[in-house]
Length: 227
Image (tube, rainbow, N blue to C red; front, side, top):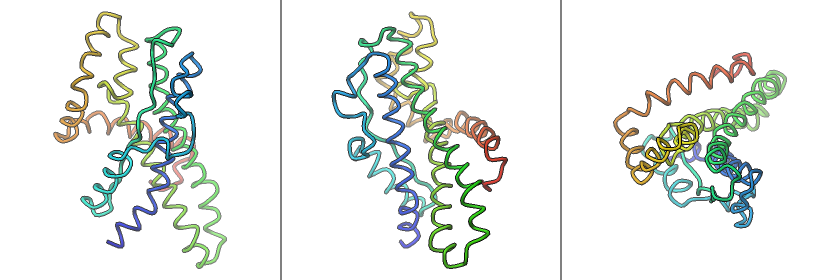
């Protein structure tokens, strides 16, 4: 139980930051393209309370903590409302607003990795053991969790199945007729995604994406964060 509570304390803030910025990015890019739905509903805020989903932000992370004995934590937030009919170009607008979430998570992962490599690790070499154990080590573990959580959230959401972000991006790239047919999958999207996860098929997409993201991260950190 102690290890689970410790993992929760380390993962909670990175999860809240990851899912909050992910959703705000969707809404803000939609707002830039003419859709004020998220703004009018008070969802363009960095207050995580506005984005908490009881299942995805509370129950799922806690259940995963218990089931994996603190080894794996993942969650999601309440989706930001977007009305594509307000876009100047609905298909392009949906694709861009969908892509904004995973890209934002990638940026957060890079920032976390850079802070870890160029700020925290150098500090660790010049601080005393007490400061290291009380401040440097916990913050370092939190930044590592931030990297992993944001990369995983980006990779997972880019699976090209609606209603995931990757599905919306793909729909924006397909010709109109094929996109219309493809979007009909959304009614079964949750079931399809769950099947992909539980059968392990999702890993065939997520694993290559994670390797790509880690390579990009390594470019910015020079591979100096020990992931």
